[in-house]
Amino acid sequence: MVKDILTMSRLKEKMKKHNIFTLNEFFVKYYGAAVEKARKRFCRSLAAYSVLCYFLQIKDRHNGNILFHKLGHILHIDFGFFLTSAPGNLLKILSGKLTA
Image (cartoon, rainbow, N blue to C red):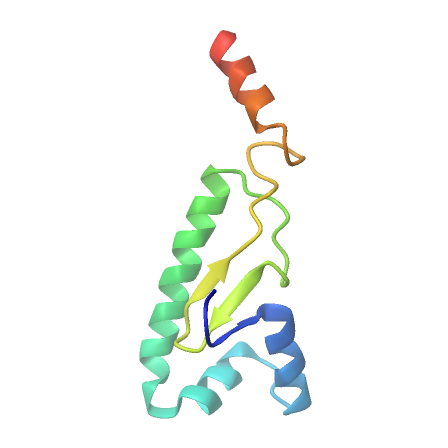
């Protein structure tokens, strides 16, 4: 269990409720003087997950599967769809590639 975390969907709801319309506005308002550190954490985690998701062909990425930590990091959850289009087919694909 990870503490101090929201899904991106929930974060967007809270931002809308407080009339914050962009991620930049949120970072400036929420982090204040520490905004640059938070932006750096966000960018680094976003870049790392983007590369990882691309190479592993992780699918089903939506705002309910991406979490935002209070320090600015993002985390991905629910990796049921990767290297295939449906959960459970990974072994079929791997065995097919190994025997081909």
